[in-house]
Length: 141
Image (tube, rainbow, N blue to C red):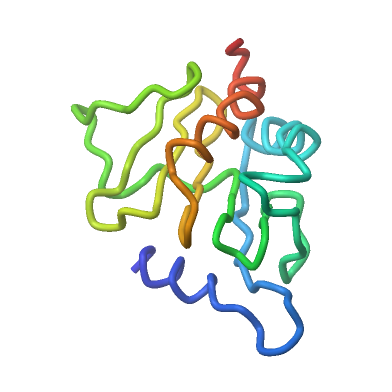
């Protein structure tokens, strides 16, 4: 179900250049972490400028035409088992969804941060660039 929702939200609204992304609703300490992350995210990511999403939300970031999207404060990935190993990039553990090769989730002690990387972008490079600000929301270097 969640995978279908993510696919639906990544559809571009015709002709206006604004991407429809359903914002998550973080709770508890994730709210503070996501509010902090919103101030740390880069204006440009892998050559793409930050662009608008609809509805506007501090918990969503989009770069370019939507090939890169970020949602902070999402639930724990349903497919992530307690025994799954995370890929560490820049001090942040990333869960790669085995059924959705473009979907990655940063696992921090305060919030889950979902990133979709598509198009011509190289996921490892995008995740490396996002690991620094994401690491700052959980006290990592």
